[in-house]
Image (cartoon, rainbow, N blue to C red; front, side, top):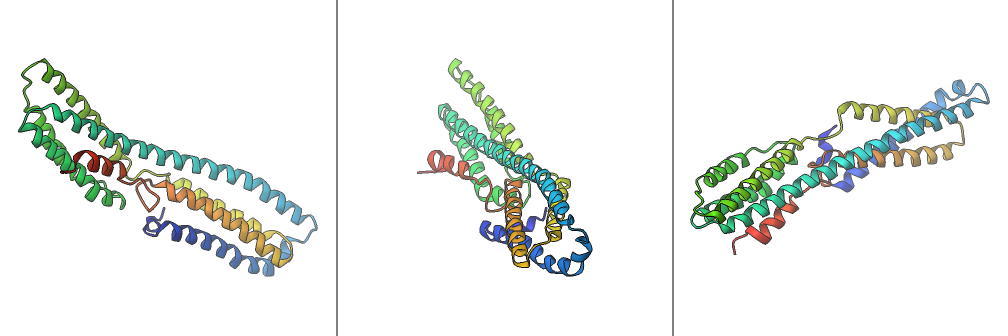
Length: 262
């Protein structure tokens, strides 16, 4: 994948895919008709055979694109669930801290608030560039060390400490899952198959024999739709990249409603 395309707004990105596919189909149409048309259509049945091949190939290629679109959406949805889960665990962990005595309560709340703010302001811009952020690790270690310093004095505090420790472990696991998916996406070999398949599909369109204006309309319409489908897959392929991506909204909501100093 060319990650530079994610630097464009989503409308520009879609227009770029549409323009490239339609332009390629139209620019190749006239040379093929002029130099290879008579050679391809030496027999009257040639147009029928090309049409049959195009129909058969379109079914297989359309099935591949459909499966890739589903896979890209599932990756996108899975990453979104991981982000929401991490934000929810941070909220639960922050609420558990309300049962701790001062000053340890205030110290741990500050560290968790600082971590959440750092994720929103610094980690997310890095993730959108494909960089796995590491700054939050120090804040998590400091929070954990502070938590282990607490000595429960009664049964209630023992239960609270055990629950806080459980929530913390779940939060760390969710964070690791998020970081592991920063560069998730379809394997490069699948994108090569998509590119080669689109070239074959458009080449078969060039080989059809019909009136030139009809040929331009049909090849342009099919190429436009083909470009839009591939654009859809590309837009969702990397869940943290581009305008159509998983954002820090869940963290922002937790920070604004629960952590933000009043």
